Image (cartoon, rainbow over all chains, first blue to last red; front, side, top):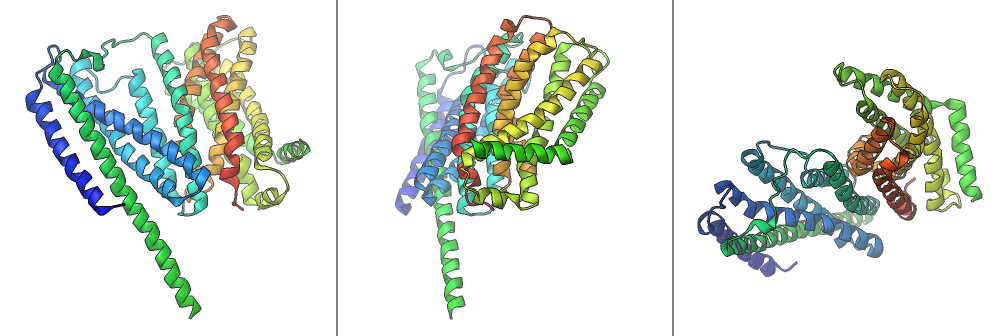
Amino acid sequence: MNRNFIAMLGIVTALLMVAALYMAFLYVPNEATQGIVQRIFYFHVPCAWVAFAGFGLVAIAGALYLWLGDQIWDDLGQAAAETGMVFCTLVLITGSIWAKPIWGVWWTWDSRLTTTLLLWLMYGGYLMLRAAADETPQSARVAAVLGIIAALDVPVVIVSVRLWRTIHPAVLVTRQGGHGLEDPRMVATLLVAMAAFTALFAWLLILRLATLRTRARLNRLTLEIALAEAGD
Amino acid sequence: MSAFAAILRKDLRLELRSGESTIAMVALSILILVVVVFALSQAGARGTEAAAGALWIALLFSGMVGATRALGAERENGCIAGLLIAPVDRATLYLAKLAAALVFMAVAEIAAVILMVLFFNLSFDSGLLRMVPILALGLLGFAALAIMLAAIAGHTRLGDLTLPMLAVPIYVPALIAGVKASAVLLGGAPFGAAWTWIRILIAFDVIYTVAGYLLFEHVMAEQA
């Protein structure tokens, strides 16, 4: 990966992030009913978006690895899972911080919360598998299969969890979605925050991918040296 | 097809002679049901919802043992090498292992259902018979997923410890559907009342049986 490109992306990310922070804390007006707490929304939603994108990437990278067998897809799968996991954790944390004053509880078994938690657990398992497996092509294939199997579950999870909650009496019917943004400044802030987090995600992903590529190269070189020495 | 029958027959004969997996699974099912009854309060340990929940916890964790043993027994004595060298494609091997695991899990499940009726003061009536397709779908989905994941877990240093962490989150949608459908039917409702949940179970089973059939070669390929 080109060094200059990574540096440029880092700078763009930093600028966008400063803009997003300024807009979320100073520029955007308070939401009428929720007050200041609602501002966490501008971080929460972008985190959720990149977390889901990361998990999608894991499955795509897995399928490409099984198909093409190139090491880079395996590395991409790992980098995407790790980065996605970070943002998925942030989604759960920022969601809890928001839920406590608004819903009165840190956690509720709402369908979106449950789906996110299950995704978090699945990819926790995926990363655990990667941590506990040796770095062999066979382990890479196994991880790729797990990434695909987990992604196949997402539609079933969404449907079943939604039914589970609709049939149960809903204690909390407050639903805060993207449509509550009546002020154009709110939309602008959300868009800038989305761009900032997408750039941050891409930057972290590429940095991690570059590290993994370097490590793979180092392993190859070490092996070559060992073989050359054994040959002498 | 004959390779499928041969592997299945081998597994069933092995199990008839040793009984290892089934005994472990039945014992675990009993223990789980006992533990759930102790863990719930006197009032909580009554009623069909608690009974259905306990039954599915037993299914989930005894199934985990069954899936682990399905491939673990082959590894312990090196049989897996023979199986992989044999001119049998991996998909057939997967289906045979799935069929064998289903038989063992069904035995454990029958024991669990009987105990559930006794522990939760239910009655042996037609409600239990109507649950058969639900439990069969639940077992098929779990076995299809867990055989695959057990093969995956076999590649790690943690081995079988990895299986629950991979299997439980993925199985949750089927678990929700199974518990709900069982509670509905145990409560005396007609079969149609559980149809929403049955559809989810069917979808889950189709997805993971097909995925296992297609992807098993990747998780068993060069392993010996």
